[in-house]
Amino acid sequence: MKKIILSTLFIISTFTFAIAQDYTTPNTGVTWTLDDIAAASPTTITISGSEYTLLGNLTIAENDAVIIDSDLTLLIDEAKLITVFGAFTVNSNAVTITALDENNPYDGFRFEEFSEIDINNATIEHGGGLRVLTETFSIDNCTLTNNVSGATTSAVIQLSRGMPQITNNIISFNENPAIGSAANSAVSAYIFNNMIEGNNQANSNRPQINLGTTMANEQLQIVQNTIIGDPTIDQAGGIAIANFVGGNVNVLIDDNIIRGNRYGITILGTNDSAEITNNIIEDNNIQGDPNLGGSGINLNSSAVGPDVIVSGNEIRRNLWGITLQGEATINLGDDANNPGNNVFAENVNSGEVYALYNNTENPVSAKHNCWIEGQQSTPEQVEDVIFHSVDDPTLGEVTFEPFLCGILSVADTEIENFSFYPNPVTNEFNFNNIFSFEKVEIYGVQGNFIASETISEGHQTVSINLPSGLYFVNFSNDAQTVTKKMIVE
Image 1 (cartoon, rainbow, N blue to C red):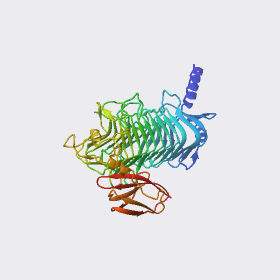
Image 2 (spheres, rainbow, N blue to C red; image 1 turned 180 degrees about the vertical axis):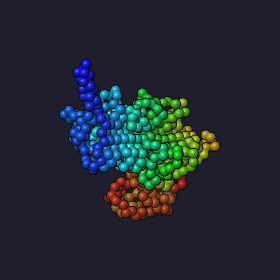
Image 3 (cartoon, one colour; image 1 turned 90 degrees about the vertical axis):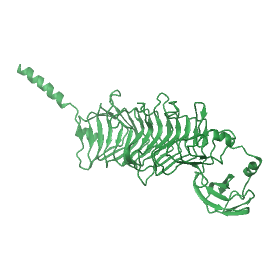
C-alpha cells in the first residue's frame, strides 16, 4: 500500500512541476530574447526550431527589454497576455505572432505607460489586440487580422496618448475597429498608408477608425490610407473623430480612399482645426437607411466652432454627399484661402440627389466646386442638388456660385480663353485685364494659398518670386472667376 501511495505522489509531483508558469523579467536592465526567457523559465516558453510557444503570461519589467530580431513564429496559449513596462521590439523580416489554437485566442498585448514599443514586419493574429497606454509606440509594415476582444475591446490598436506612429500596415477583418482611442484621450497619431478593410466584424455601431480628442498643438494626421468596408456587415463606418467631453480636435484627413462603409467621414462636436482634403469618398451606403447614415462627410456639433475646411474631395454614390447638423460649420470653397474643387456625383436617396444638405442655421461658403460631375450644369440644376434656405427658410444659405462644370455663355467662353504670358514664367507675367478682374491669387498644387494682388483694368504685370514648379493663378471679380495653370522655371 505504501509503495502505491509513493508512486501516486511521484506522478502528481512530476505533473505539478510541468505546469506552465507566468514569468516576469528580473528588472536588471538587461535586453532579453525569447531564447533567454526560455532558458530562465522553460515552463513559460518552449522552443522547437524557429517555433516558440508561450504557455504562461509574460511581463517585461520596467528596466528590461525584449527583442525579437530573427524570423520566427510565436504561438501563444489561450488567454495568455504579454504585458510590457519596459521595451519591446520586433525587428526582423518575418515574424508571426498567433494563437496556439486559433479557436482559443490569446489575450493580446498590454503596453503600459512609459513603455517603448517598436514593431516591424510582423503578422499579429488570433489574439486580443494591442492596448497602447504609452506615448512611445510605432508599428510599421505589419499585418493584423482575425483578432478579437481581449487586452482591448475597443479596437485592434487602442491608443491612449501622445503621437503614436501607425504606418504601412494591413489591418483587416478583425472583430473590433482597426484603430481607436477614448473620447477623453489626447491622441495625435500619424496614421499613414495603411490598408484597412472589413474591421468591426462584430457589426456594432462603430467606424473602422474611431478616435476621440487630440493634443492641442499636434495634429492628428490620417493620410493616404485605404479604408474599405465589408459588404456583409452594415454598421461599420469609415472614419469618426468625436469630441463629446470637451478637449481639442486638431485633425487632417487627406488623400484617403474611403469606400463601401456605412458612412465615409464624420466629425462630432467642436474642433479647433479640421481639414478634409483630397479624399475619394465613394459608395458609403451599405446600410441603405438615409435616416441613420450614408453621408460621404457628416459634421454634427452642438456649438459653433471654426469651419471645417473641405477641398479637393471626390464624393460619389453615397446616400448623401455632405450633411451638416446642429451648429456645424464648414468652408467648401471661398475667395480667400480655400479653392474648393470638390466633385460630387450621384449621392442619391429616395430618388433625390443631395450633394449638400445644410440642416443648420449657419451660412455656408461653397464656391468653385463641381456639383454634378460629367455634365455642364446651369445654376438651376446645381440648386436642385443643394438643400438650404431656398428649400427651408429656417436654414442657412449655401453660396455655391461661381461653380465648376458650368454651361459657358459666349462671354464665359471668352473668359475661359483668357491667358497670360509668358508661361512658363521666370519672375513676372503679363496680361491685358479686359474683363475687369479685381484680384489675382496664386495657389500651390495642394490648394495652399501663396499670394494675392489687387489689379485694375488694362495691361498688368505681376512679379513673382517662387520656386520652380506648377501653380494655379486665379483671376476674379464679384461676378467672374477663371483659374489657369502656371509653370515657374
